[in-house]
Image (cartoon, rainbow, N blue to C red; front, side, top):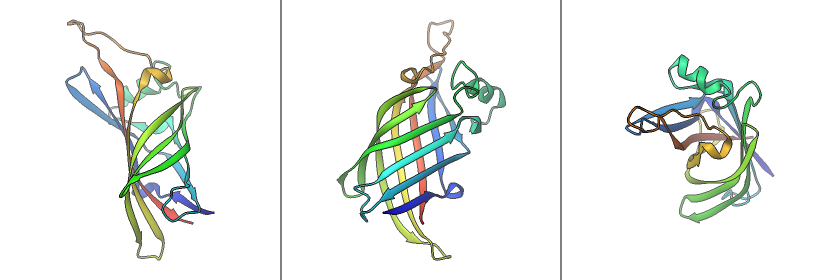
Length: 174
């Protein structure tokens, strides 16, 4: 079994959500960890584990970040981690895969599907074997108990239910 650890300095975990349905707010988690375990070179038997520290959320707005950490959204005090454990990693074609697994957020665990693009393998200047992945998917935040919303004067919602997940990850072969 070969283990690959995420390189946080060359990776990012971000999300996008519509605000007032006319613009998009982007954010990220600054503290996270991930591991891939695989016997096969093509990762087709990969087991992938990921977790992010909710208190590391950043949207470049301190007041909004505080609200996201509050019980209205992530409830970081009672649920400090977001976790993902893969169930399958299926090769579609070329460099495309489908990653399925259980996302645990705010005390709720649900199965999700993510699209993965394998960006390839490279050896860095220090002789370390690195692998790149781009991961995308969508979740409904209400499925995980992130219920808060407000209604505008015109009757529109402030925050959309759909959240886009975007991960650019570089893994180092251990």
